[in-house]
Image 1: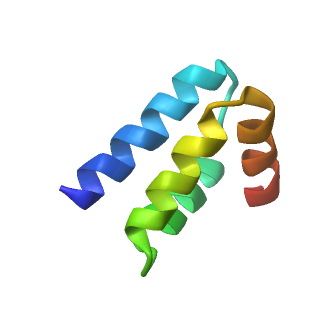
Image 2: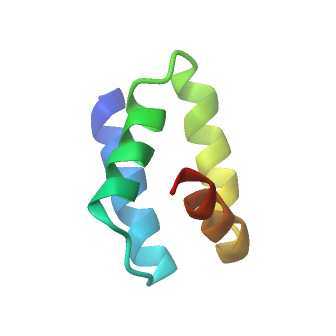
Length: 64
C-alpha cells in the first residue's frame, strides 16, 4: 500500500505541475519517497509541497 501511494503521489504531481519530468527525476523522486525510512512524514511533506506549484518545482530542481 505504501509503495502504491508513493507511485500515485508522484504520478499526480507530474500531471499537476504540467511540466516535462525526465526519467531520471522520476526515478530519484521514487527512491526518495518509496524507500524512505520515514515514509509517512515523506508523504505528508510531499503533499504539502504540492499545494504550491512553485514549491513543487523547487523540489524537482533540487532532485535533478
